[in-house]
Image (tube, rainbow, N blue to C red; front, top):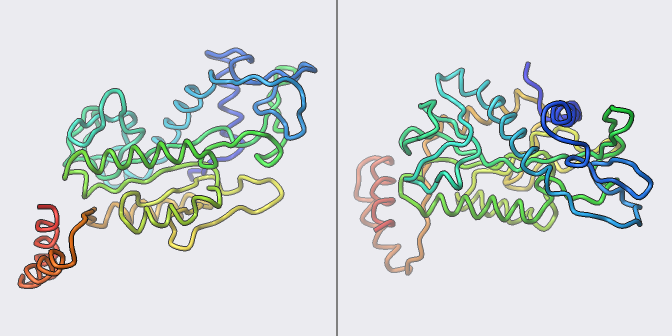
Length: 288
């Protein structure tokens, strides 16, 4: 049974990084009293530096982790989870590839018609960790340190929204592809209404957290009112949601038209015989 994100995954990241390609100074802040910590503690008053070297490492680690997670679901249907996919048709370039996709094709170079789901990964180190005596020890959850990990960072949210909008406006072919953002933290209160609006408008189908218990001694938000944000508590819950989103035929549409134009479009579309034909006619007219 696959597990969702936990302390064990973060500890494994540090251990593997230290063993294979990173120094402690690239992964931890060094306090004035010589402690190696993943984040500055809440009560730390000493001189502070900015650590950038860990970002690329944890980014690659979490994208691979999400790819493996999604492959366990995609593989059941004969599909593939692909990391770093490129599809010029919908704005996924070599400079800005998709973090992870589910596709009918296993290659990195993709056709829009093969892509079934786009996943943007906004995960980072959640807990605080100390490197001591060649071991990595958890010393507190995100409420005990000064960092804003994952989806708690405003810049992470804005980057995910911006990239999703770029995909949506790049080509009409992106209109049928769902986009989700996967993180490992809750969102801030400032974004609760925004993520619901993004889901209702169809730009992004959800901000999903795959960390069931990000706080050691407290609960975190499970979902927003319209489920624009949702926290998964086990793999089966995630499995069911991914299968559901893959099985639905979706269409994103966005337009600014007068009430008269909109009324004419509805009247013309309503002349079609079936609901499917009415929908197809409406989407065709509203995009013209």
